Length: 294
Image (cartoon, rainbow, N blue to C red):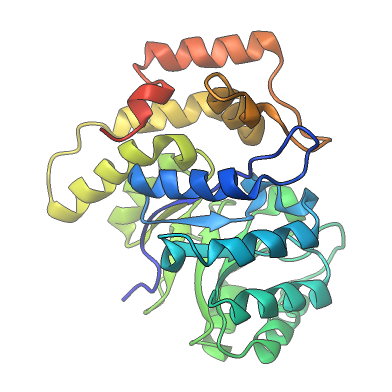
């Protein structure tokens, strides 16, 4: 049985005008995506600008996140290169009752499966009751998990390595492990993945598409006819024409200006790209209003 299953948003971080983290609105946003259909949300994934946000602000948010009505539905991303800082942040999260983590291997340096296994071994041996979802995204960190590497980690730590977010898409068609969750990183892979035995998805655009993605997921589980999967994939394709973070913040920023704040070197879309995105989404009958739950 999968340990993590369903529709998860890689939740966005909301910033103040001075580019500090707006704790209240970031948590409200995460709660909203769950209200709109997600089974849960990953806090401080790459979509949440995790690599750019200071550790002190992450800890501050975690201290407030324990009061969220959906405390049990969150996965905490670490978004750190340093092994020591990753373990330290996890210790803080664990002390607050969070034990599910989304962890990507360090960026910049070149290494192989052997070193990746050593990296996660150090984490598990330090936080022995942690539940870890591997983050497979070669585009961001320069390393791509192999099936053999994942199999070895699960064999070594079956109670700790509980899943993978596959944003490189080289794993979700091939991994076949019991009691392990495989979650592609795109709505376009949702239905295919479910048919292959995947557990759901964790994606950036589920910040906006949670309602549609949840219906596709629920219809698959109940055996109902799929009526909106193509629309869901088309919406995802429009966002994919741009940097996803820029596109999402531009999309939400049309109604709430605070979403237009991004940490450099990130930025919102230029005026023409923003206009094109919104117009093309409108042609798909998709807007901020229609994306919200009734």
